[in-house]
Length: 520
Length: 115
Image 1 (cartoon, each protein chain N blue to C red):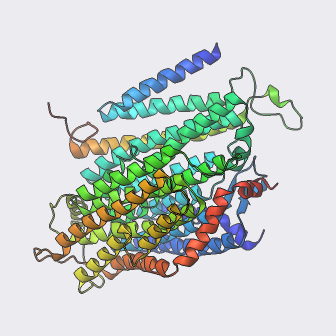
Image 2 (image 1 turned 120 degrees about the vertical axis):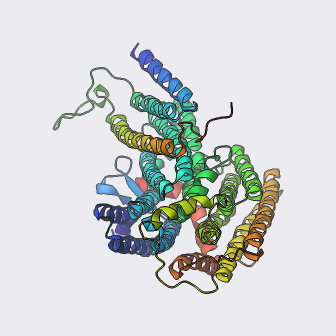
Image 3 (image 1 turned 180 degrees about the vertical axis):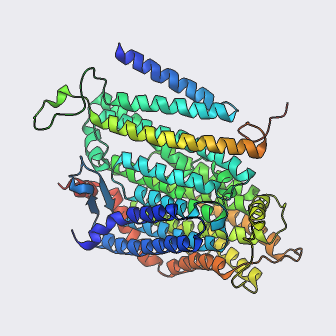
């Protein structure tokens, strides 16, 4: 094994170690904790870049823990899609951590440990090659996300977290039922091994496997937020503190990734053309887009608007995966990356914008409450440089987010949607489902731009009560970083789409993955 | 016969768990989640096939007939599931108490329904 191949384990180990160290450090040593945490996240970005290069060179790199051969031992697999998603997660981690340095890290205990464990869980879910470890990493990321959803406390947040936790606990139980049914039917949990075994199984076992896979799918779709399994999402995401919500933007994508990976792996090894191709998933995804778009239009405050935008993005991805031609998957993956960056920036931005408004304004009561708690302890002293012309900068960033999410030119959101539309129209004749998705993609963009323009006008152009949000450079920097990345990806769209197309091709032809993992 | 008893137990636990999960009081929901997770743990265990008097561990140095032993993997899985379920249920209880403290009611929506 080369040095780079050994790095595959690092996206799990690095946050684990950083999380453990920050856990034992006293809350008083916040500067040290923050340094360790941000440092680990930066190292994670560097590791992810190496992995992206590694995955670009070879088809899929398999890391066997303890050197045990595949169906018996545990494997981690990094291919192009997993590598890009890990890089995305690491970037979001850096942005959220830097943002939290200004004040959020002090809003509750153990913030840095929770973020690190969340990163560990997400990375593990992207890397793992067997179903039970997928469950374990899901639980790690969920447990950390419960803590982060509660971060900052307050009545609204605790109430929303209660729903979030109960729904996700129930979904985890479904996950276990699905995984154990699959084990009972096939005798293996290794995904590559499963892909080979399930369709040579005898008829009764095969029915059990299919039932297990369906139950597993429901568990994934709860995490991905597909309608009608998504009603927990807007409440929990809009109540969460800004850096937590910015990280949550990637959690639904973990569900989408799990559907994509297992769906294509199990369906793809059959004799027919590989695709997740169930009409259910396509229509469910489209219903999610419609529900999300309606929610975006109906949202009165910006936090909910951002949360419903998560649903639109998630629904778009699910529908695109389900229709599932290879170029469409590649385009959808590009859209996944850029829309997650934009959503994350929007969640951070919302908090800054709403900070300028007086306490008592709808959801902001929550934020104010959290800050009010800190004020007594003298932690609210404004240090560091406040930015002049904050409103102009915030307005500009907000406009960039709106353009990204609605998919208008010239930014990357447009490139992603255009690539998807292009891929939808490539088949001849174009099926009805593709036309529906096309209409919904354009319609949801329309709804997004109407709602965002309305919110923007109300916030930035209306005569304010003279309050200008006090924004510090360190809070604006992560937003500029995320939006700057979006601009870079607009310019470099060709390269990234090319890379992800290659990744999508590999996903749609899972034979290579199976051979690599089982070392056949 | 064993199969019937186990299946019945899982069914009763899961059924009561789902019913409690749909109740409006947070404590009922917590107990519902706990019962559901017991049901799921038993289910995982049963997925390794029910064997009576068969050990899951092969004695070292002996080549044994695998058919004479119980499947150890579901037992390992169920241990992991128990630990994770236990931890998350504990967290749920804490959140439940915090929600009670903030809202002054144990209704899951944080407010009493209109009469």
